[in-house]
Structures are given as structure tokens and as C-alpha cells.
Image (cartoon, rainbow, N blue to C red):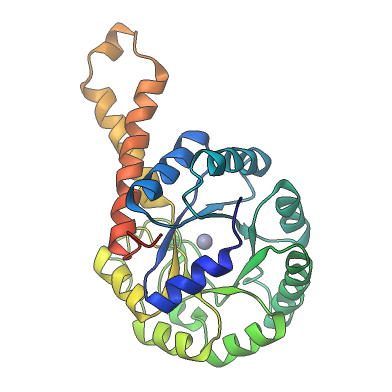
Length: 283
Ligand SMILES: [Zn+2]
């Protein structure tokens, strides 16, 4: 059975490790992350954004939970922006949803998040929300720091919404950074951890650097969302493979063979992060 995210994140917070949450949308990469967690004895949180076929992802994940019953796994809707899409994901069987109204004013973010929490908690589903603004890496400007999550405001937000965990803006952004990765505000993470009664989530983990990410976990991050690093490991491996294999020229290679090369590299990158975040041998 798919698990609610709460027990997984609570344990990570208490024991000081981080759970890497891959953004996944097809069967091969879904099975790869289950295999990785099975081999390294790690818990699994799968993120999936609404623009994917969330009904299919829910069904495939439920199938894989039966195939890998020893892997504790949660399926979380990533960046749901409306009440309706969160309700739909829950109907399909997601065990967790993220409602992201971080672009809205504080009061509106509280109002919608609280509504989603009420609905989700009624059916045993956990909720992640976001406070502070985390855009894409290409949007980073000089006033970037103004959008970081403020501890006092975050405390009010958690109290007013009863949300289960909070995505915080502390220096990362989605996608790849142009030039150096920004410095993650570790002091702010530590302060947020001290102030808030719920686990903290870091989005935009890709290309922030292993050392910074490991330090973010030490400072108090319990879940790290990853997409770009995993995806590019896979696509680069496919590109390299196609460039060098002459069987392609002859035209008799099954498509699944090329994709399999990418999935293997994707899985290896995911296993790397499980170890960087201290998540190995936790189940
Ligand atoms: Zn995100």
C-alpha cells in the first residue's frame, strides 16, 4: 500500500537524513527508483507534476508497490496549484499532495492550503505546501533573497493551515543554474527547523552540488526534490550510446535498448543522491 508521507518524513527529520524525491512520469523510471530503493534499503517518495498522466502514474505506482512490497513508498502530487487537481490526484490514489499557492498573497495561500488540508486529511492523505517563492533557475535576479521563507511568517502559516510539511525558499530554484549554483542559506534552514513543528522540503535540488545539499540535510531538510540531474544523466547516456554504436546505423536496435541505457544512468544518479543524503540502510 502507498504510504502517507508523514511517517517517512518524521523519521528522516528525527534521524537527520534526507529522502530524495524524484520527479517521475513513466514506467521505466518508476521501476528504476523502486529498484534503487530496494537495493539500498531506502524509503521512497515519488513526485509527479499534474501535467503528466497522473492517473496512469498512480496505477503504475500501485503495481510497483505490489512488486516491491519491502520498499516503503509515498506518491506525492508535485506543485498542484488548485483544490480540484489535488482532489483528482487523491481520487486516483495519490497518498500525498502538494498544494502550491506560493505565488499568491499570504492570506490566499493560507486559505487554499487549509481547504486542501481539510479534504486530504479526511481521507488520510498528507499535504505539502510552499511558502516563499521558488521560481526557475533562469529567473534568479538580484532581489532573489527577498522571496526567501521568513521563519515567523512560516510559523503562522503552519499554524493556520495544519499542513504536514513545508517547501521553503532558501536559495535553490528549479532547473539548471547558469554559472555557479547559488549559495543555500543554511542558517535560515536551521532557523526554520527550530521554529517549525513540521518537516522541511527543498525543491530545485539538481545542480546545487553534493556538498551544499548534504549540508542542507544536516541543517534540517528532510525531502529533496530532484528532476533535472536525474533526467540529464539519462538523456546524456542515451546520446553517448547512440553516437558510438554502429548497430544504430544498421537500423536493427530495439528502441527499448537505447532507452534502457538512459534508465540505467538515471537510476545510478538517483542511487548517488540516496547516499549523499544519508538515506541508505534506513528501512
Ligand atoms: Zn518544485
